[in-house]
Length: 106
Image (cartoon, rainbow, N blue to C red; front, top):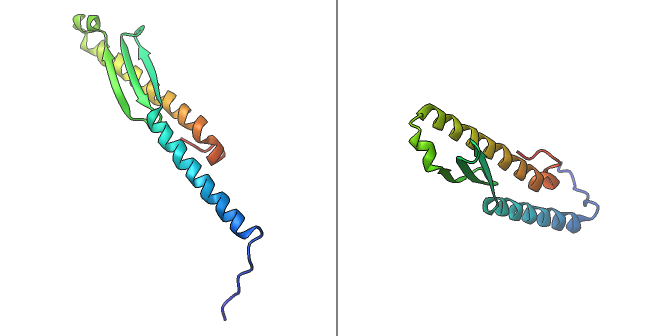
């Protein structure tokens, strides 16, 4: 015997609210793809620009940094700047998506 479904309180109103929230979430995610942060290391010798969706847009190295010939130091500075950019980007995403996820955003 099939169970009859009782109508939800607010029925269509609840559905429209969910659809509106989904649209707002999709817009917030799209906005994050356009928002960028910049992180740096080595007093600005290495700069990384990353989107709110953790896409690296650019890495800039001061030409003087390359003249030192210290490859290990350059690698370390790039690593520091990239990791900081990732952390900052995740914080941006958490702030932007937090209202939709109850604070569970990445």
